[in-house]
Length: 112
Image (cartoon, rainbow, N blue to C red; front, side):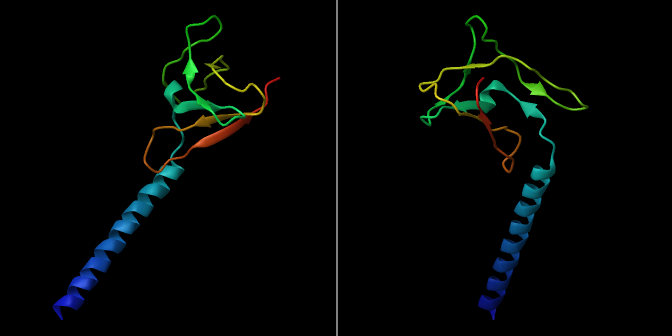
């Protein structure tokens, strides 16, 4: 009898934890994406090598973290990356740090 009770309580606790994790994941996916920062961006070249933004060279500007709410926008702006293979396309990989269950975005770029 005690073994059956322990099994039931264990399953019940597991289901409650799974529901809490699912609820947190669902609410994180519904939240608007409100942050962007240089450390959230990587550029992946056609050789699949990743690089981070850099500044300090003419035309290569830096920017601080931006919070987007109430209709605010940012850009356009120049951001520079060092690439080993300059053959397009490039992938701008964005990994915002706004929660454990958030999103990542890949944007394919064809330079003109």
